Amino acid sequence: MAITNPFTFLQQVRSETAKVTWPSRRETMISTIMVLAMVVIASIFFFTVDQLYGWGFDLVFGPAS
Image (cartoon, rainbow, N blue to C red):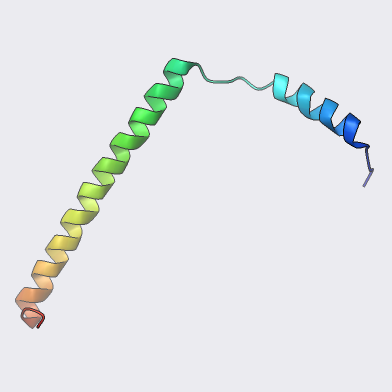
């Protein structure tokens, strides 16, 4: 494995970073909103499943004391 000096490494990092296609502000906002929406949907789903399991266990085993 070849060892490069820090200055060369930083130059390489800078050149690779310049090749990255960065998302626009609009794309970032849309992606953020989509992620938040999915978090809300998943939270509602898991809350509902948890409540149904709790109700089912209470039905079978009786309420917890």
